[in-house]
Image (cartoon, rainbow, N blue to C red; front, side):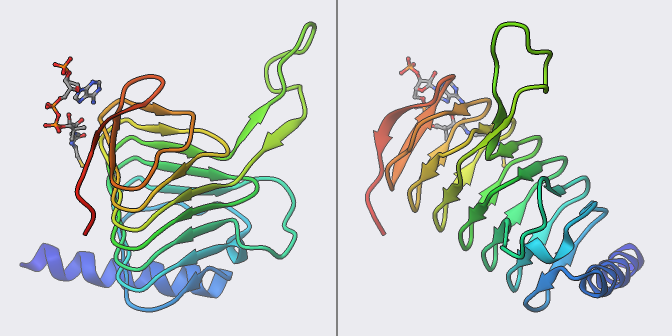
Length: 182
Ligand SMILES: CC(C)(COP(=O)(O)OP(=O)(O)OC[C@H]1O[C@@H](n2cnc3c(N)ncnc32)[C@H](O)[C@@H]1OP(=O)(O)O)[C@@H](O)C(=O)NCCC(=O)NCCS
């Protein structure tokens, strides 16, 4: 009980600090020991979002005034997950993102003679629809959209769009089931 109160106070303190830094926090949310290192104004967090310990919201590239990470209301991000956006990563409402996931909207160009990371940044936005569940250790790569109500199995690497109400698993992730829509 005491721990819960302390965590609540700490969460509120973090929300105040990140608001002062420019993060758009739309209402009450639960922030454990998270990290938003830079470009705070490019991050929007909806009401009721819960970000568990070790969540990192990293915005790279130019601060051009646009939103680059958007988390819809009621979405939960489990421990040690990183969202790394240079263009835009949008996660819908009431999603559950498992622990140790990595969601990035960019790559470095690869080619003969280029050292790792030397190539230009190639980005394409990611959109994860409402009510999606990503299991543990899922990677989502640039340009991917995941339709509303879909489930991505643990350890999957999502490289192509996943339609709504699908269960997709594996590397690369492939749809194995279609779920009834809500
Ligand atoms: C995706 C998932 C929900 C599917 O569950 P399910 O509908 O019960 O699916 P099944 O167990 O019937 O598996 C169907 C097939 O997909 C395969 N499969 C299931 N999950 C897989 C995964 N994550 N990666 C690769 N293959 C997977 C199964 O081996 C099975 O293959 P088969 O038909 O050749 O035997 C579940 O397997 C999963 O990955 N859950 C995430 C767990 C997790 O990360 N929890 C932490 C939480 S926040």
